[in-house]
Amino acid sequence: MTPHIPGVLRVEGLDGWRAPLVFDSPHSGTEYPADFDHAADPVRLRWAEDTHVHDLWAGAAEAGAALLHAQFPRIYIDANRAEDDMDPDALDGPPPWPLAPTEKSRLGIGLCWTKVPPDGAPLYARRMTPQELRARVETYHRPYQRQLRALLDAAQGRWGAVWHVDCHSMQDRASAMSTQPRGAQRPDFVLGDRDGTSCAPDFTACVAEFLTARGHSVALNDPYKGMELVRMSGDPASARHSLQIEVNRKLYMDEETRAPNAGYPALKATFADLARHLAAFTQAALQGQTA
Image (cartoon, rainbow, N blue to C red; front, side, top):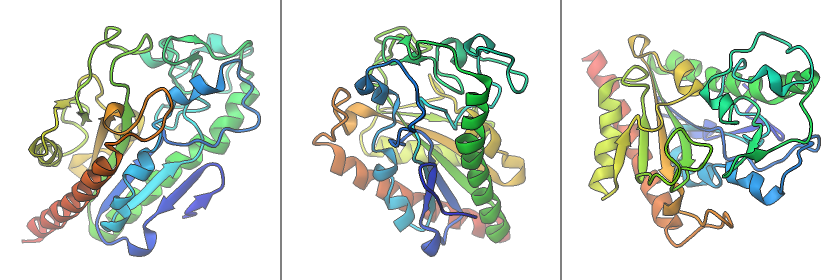
């Protein structure tokens, strides 16, 4: 396991890893590759970022969990998409492998984004080459997903079970690139467990109850159920539990400037408390399994 691949990923907390918990932030990367030949305003590119999310969850490592985060931007290639989730028409030649685009690709937010948030303007002045797609997948996408799998396998091998939290942020209101009607108001948090299939219900309930007790509004699986990382990580029957947490950006930053707002310190403290709460939850769950 390589804890740091420059420009690709970093893992925090391995030295003090003492709970069967793995957190990851696949969309908070801000290191834009030099070969990103886009035709967009660089300021608008940042609207695709889950800016600051890995820092907001820094307390997870202090609570005894492992914390993986991407350093590359999701608009370049999205680690939370399947390798085939791309429109073949976005390429200027035959794809390097069969593609099966989903609704995300149609919206311009598939494996490699083709539109610029929040209004969906074209990201490129040309079509990508198949060679570019292959290079991005091999250099960024696969290493990130491999690292996450390695962390989950290591945790399960050590403790017999693992709980995974996939950390994201969302715009306060739905944009033109959303599955919701444009302008729809989002709650403070959306928890995604793929309609109850990616983790045991008590894990989802543990997070929901913690956040609502703090006065936050919480929705479940609407509009975000969890994408590829939760799908590949969650298998409750095999003691692998995966939950996606989306936080409304209004709670911690100015969406235009990306600068932290006055709520940033409080949210970061809430996440540190939540991580400690989940560490205690997992320890109790393990004790229950062996009782």
